[in-house]
Image 1 (cartoon, one colour):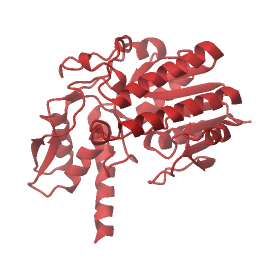
Image 2 (spheres, one colour):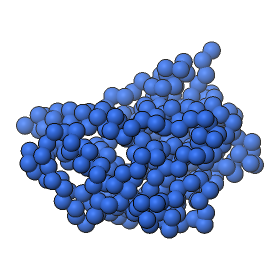
Image 3 (cartoon, one colour):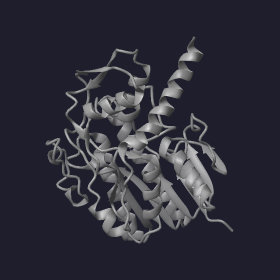
Image 4 (cartoon, one colour):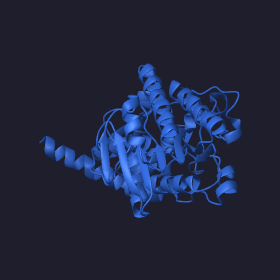
Length: 325
């Protein structure tokens, strides 16, 4: 009989791709989310539409499951996370999801739980230099995340590890660094930087311009979705609890990232830097620990993943414009 997995947040970008990976490995998969995946990435054997802030929903979906992947959270890009306008919802909703899912899993006897944390939990004081950010796993304390989203992630990491210590629950925790790829949110205000820049370039007229928040000198690394899912599965099948970074070490400025997308588009566009929420000045994954513990780290060049992502977002943008005519 095949093992049964639950993906919390299966209607989202990473969750949808993770469901596909688990299915390809022979798992029976149950998904749960507030809504179905808007791009049709819906291959779970069973999908429950429900709010994990409700403990009854968490109890229902955890029943009869071997492994749980908890990716459900109230989240979005810089325009959602760093304005401060959504802090109460972000902290309350995400914390309630984690409290309910973890306790339901404990009482249901779930064997393994994966929790998706974020690089946003790293201290802001270690990310002031865009050319030399420090994001090694042991640099998390003294804690000083740059957003309430980061503080909630840090709290929830400790919550999962407390259940591991006190109740023997097998947990695996990863800190994601800017995951991107096809079938992710690309408009509406919650999209991440790669998708937002792809959309701006796709929609810009030839010889036009695109706006980039901040001076564009802030640095980040971006990880393609396939490598993210590979890292998740390797971590869950290991004997290492984490937390561990899952991200790319190919650091790039936001302006240079935008120039890459413009080059992929073949358009002649200029960049206009404007005021806007930007988060920390620099962030890059440190992959020494994941390589030490798993004998693996992401290696896909950023441009290779962006070729696929830009093509998909351009197609989605064109289809949306045709429908609006």
